[in-house]
Length: 69
Image 1 (cartoon, rainbow, N blue to C red):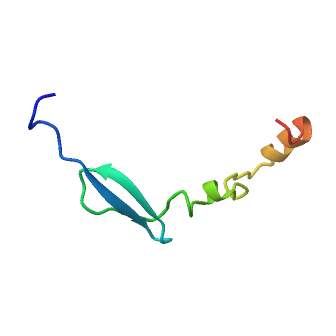
Image 2: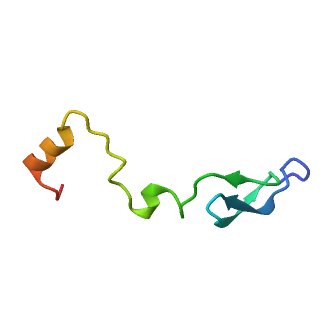
């Protein structure tokens, strides 16, 4: 590799609003995030609120095929 053309990477700690800290290699100095894998509802198992069904299509599908699809 040529010297002097690649950016300098630093190991930083990314801080989430929930208090979790993650380490990443990046060119930036300081990163603060609102959601991470510790506090995001999808990763915590709260998937019930992710389905928005206004016409009953999900229930119709579950009635037809069951919950084991």
